[in-house]
Amino acid sequence: MSIVPPEPESFTERSTNRSWRQWQVMMPLLLGLVGFIYIGYLLDWNARVIAGVTLLIGMLSGVFAWLLSLIGLMPLVGPLVVKVLSFSFIWLLNAVGYLISFIAIRRGYSKDVLTYRGLTIALMIGIVIGYIVAQYL
Image (cartoon, rainbow, N blue to C red; front, side, top):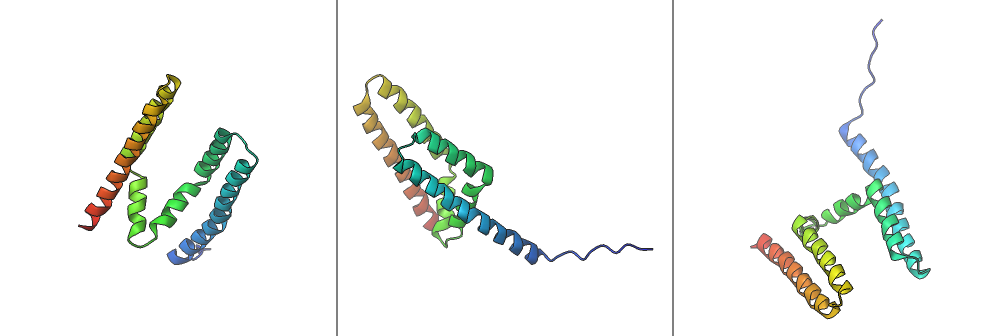
């Protein structure tokens, strides 16, 4: 008595089924998150609660990674946008800027914080533009 294993499905059938399921799940989830943010804004809910719930649902479901991969599919510009969004230096610079801004506002240096944040944003935009220009030269 021999047991014949079932015939495996082809790679394209598996990947097609999986991506179609993700599309069917991720798009309504993304639209639901956008709707949740919009309703929270209209009802004047606490911004930290809205951001926390959105971040928690987005990270657990993988909708942020799915959205980045969708952006990465755009020809020429998509991969550059994904690379720029994943620069750890920019994230670190922004986080340190928010921390310093928080401390400075508490001490009464709000005008200086505006100048500092403007310079930080200009620096980050310059880094991004320089990276994009360097990719095409």
